[in-house]
Length: 130
Length: 489
Image (tube, rainbow over all chains, first blue to last red; front, side, top):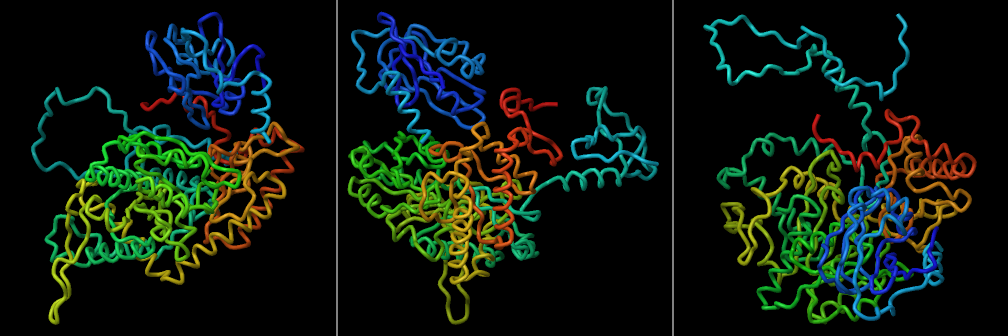
């Protein structure tokens, strides 16, 4: 299981990378391994839309299950990654890199009370593995 | 002549078997003047296979032998209640008097069919502890939809405009949130606690003035009876919500507990599961709903009723009526009558004692399997189960083997695999429901296979990754099947 040290993590297994006032959002390596082979992905919002933390931004579907994806931060969507819908298998291959879902412009500091750092997220994943 | 033995995957398609000029029937000589068809109606090509009658019969008989059904063997597909379907149901549902009726016949001429519907409604009300019943929904999810729409209609009639939230435990069948969304409600999940019950602490803040209701499957999809079910239902009622019962797991409760007594307001039955009618490719479903008296006017119809009471000279006259505030019909005509008939026969055949015994044996069989298998396979919620239980399909000493591998390998031992990867709250879930119709001998054979597979997983995991090896087709490429689905030839 890969976990990147410089990201924030949600309980629903999304990651957030903060660079300046841009937040990039994707799903974690743990999430993709639990889902197994992903066969469909969709981002259901468009560039320019504003989102609130907790809003559903898309769906991924594997041979096992379907799962909604939620944005852990609020702001305005500045980019949507078409590649995840075109080639959903990149989520299995490169969850923290090529398979980002959206970029959001955040206004001011984000509310990270519901988010975990890499160490806490590792513990959170291990707990669920018993 | 010697030919090499063939396996199922060398079966040719009926087009590949075609031999030019061969035919199954010959027409008599034409004794009327021949006429030309208009050229616009003619095709250049019509690819039809050319075969004899024997070719066709053998082809389809051979294909049918590749099938696996309850008439072949054990089918522990959790949540689906794949019990053996008694053949008397088939026999009685094929009686001329039932087969050769039309739904638009004058009611005086179909009193027998209407009596069956009327009595089945009454039986389902008694089994569920409810006051009203409609048989029209065509399957389980259709029953859910009808029941949740009934809840919505009742709230509307009371002027409860704000009540838009339907609570769904995270162990629920996927149809529950889909039903609620289709009914215009907002779905909010409720987590499961460490014992597999609805988490009361998490439920409490959700019980507010936006609440329309909750959809509960009890026993839940972990096969566990919710230990706080009465308290949960009271909390929801106190907040002004109604309680929907998903009857998918009724096979555990017949004659033992009635949803109506536990505080449920409306529920559906899956006649095809609980009352042993063919399903899952073998026939259509049927999802009647039962409701408490205060909802009786809102359920879909028509419902069977007595139009004229019995007199000394005449039996009662049965007919159909639409409940007063009903949302109307959810299905053409009166629902899946053939399925109702089979369920009616089954209930009469079992009787009150027999139905209770069904649930007792379904529960006993599940616990027998669970007790033997939990010694080897992890059991995340370890307490006595009802009619089914959920193991983790991952073994401590075989980390690369997954639930899917175990399920596929079971096919080599001639068992239908259990449900896998559901419910979602268990990793690598294997959901096993033996039903009451299996003998101890069959259960022991299944345990033996599962234990052998666990050993194989440690010693030769590749064997499991490659399974099944003895079926007509080997391991399917599920990713390709999901991504490159070709629906046309």
